[in-house]
Amino acid sequence: MTYAAPDPALDPSTAPESSSPRRGLGCALEIVETLVLTLVIYLLIHNFIAQPFQVEQPSMEPTVQDGDYVLIDKVSPRFNDYQRGDIIVFNPPQGEGDVPFIKRVIGLPGDTVELENGRVYITPPGGNPVRLIEPYVEQDGGKTEPTIPRDPNGTAKWTIPASSYFVMGDHRSVSEDSRFFGPISRSLIIGRAWLRYFPIGRIGFLNRPTYDGLPSGSPTPVPTQASGASRLGDEIPIAARLDRLLALG
Image 1 (cartoon, rainbow, N blue to C red):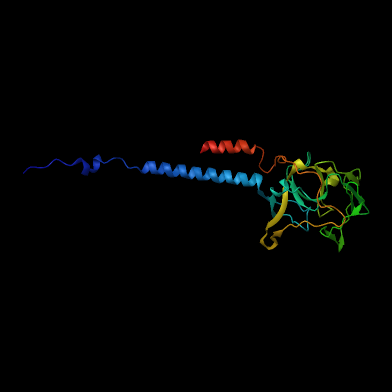
Image 2 (cartoon, helix red, strand yellow):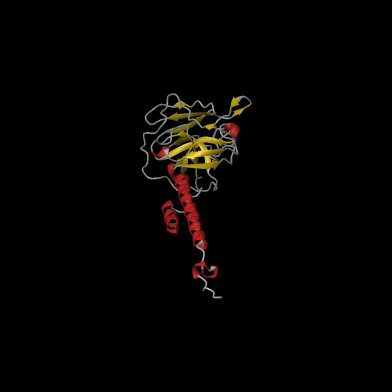
């Protein structure tokens, strides 16, 4: 009896190595590319469009509570500058810590802000003093908390420079605001707080009030350049971040 030689094509020992490692490497690369793309999209949204923010202070009560989560709008201020009554989030002035503040815009560039008998008066450029009616201010025993000076010198009058804003918290008796450190530069502002999204029972838009007898906005043109870096994640320029991330792909 004769035996035929084994066919190499049918011998498992001579079969080519499996392509599984290559497929695994391809899947790993796809995962890395997806993660990098997701991170790039996140950074773009976080730095230029919207940013979540947890309130860690009671100075805006009762409008915004300590522990609330709000969404910061970074887009609209590029086209429609900050207006009187806006609630903004900004990096603290030098010497005021590291945690961003949340306050309400009271005085615009060129305004004169004056405190008298617990009330707030605004004199716009070329105009007459107008008393602010502020229904959002915290109540104490059924009465609106008075707005009084809070710095050691008892300063009660400020003229707002160009590209600056006078801000105060709605809880006037506890708020550390422009009555302490003066008007803030626009470059410190991170964005406009426009939506509270947590807790669920308090979801809603943070609407801007109107003030009879006063312009809501400033005639100062909106700056064409982005405002200063946010301490919530902009220490490295965004262009450098994107270059690094794209290099990974």
